[in-house]
Image (cartoon, rainbow, N blue to C red; front, side, top):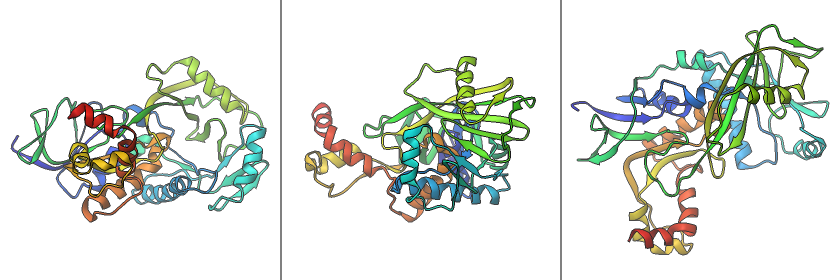
Length: 359
């Protein structure tokens, strides 16, 4: 263990890959028990579609992230296949909601029938991202993480000054205030010989699923089953997605590819980015936190960070969160997505029980 890295990023999904890429000027290593952009990221539709709804911090974050992501991928020479997307209501109740949302939308759009068309609707190919975003990577399964002599040691084999946890729904370190929920998502592709009846294929669609015709194939994607750890890729699941796609347009074709994976979602849907809080030290320093007081001071684990909880929009959210993480590390910037928001809520609800059990 002669070499000490500046950063080791654990987890080579899209959040981990882009975080390692942002830190490539330093001595940074990305590790994962699989390969780069495997698991949930390999099964992503990688759609860059706007979100409509009540104007809120979450909606603004999603849409700002899409704009940033398109610019980032283009700069890196990655084709964004920008064709525009038509967001369609799912039912009559949705039609009424869309009337309310129309006044809330901040992005340029056009009304088409009962839906909203956005010119910026795009997608990227996972293989294209894998080829263009080059990072120092080692296939390596993390089994033990320890902090010794002012450095982090992984499996008694890798030393690093800083660790960035980007492990998706898998938990390597017990952080009581951070809960990541697995959400099963799938992407299927249909053969080039698909039959389509009188529909435009030069734009993308989203209703109960996302539908795209790109590089001569239909791509259908959805993130739709929470906490379904037993979910697996199968033809029955694929047929369910095709049924949803047929609510958008009539498609007949052979399924040639089925990919699924567990996406990682936080409790409040926002990604989680920033420093890991030292729970014991912070609570013991100010036990009034558990009664609802704002913490007088928050203590952090030295050199331990997280970027996780991208949800079903990893290929857009990860562009923004990887930038924000770097700003937190080097500029000590504040972010509304940092770990404090989750810690304060957890401390008020579970902090007293935690103290009683630990001390």
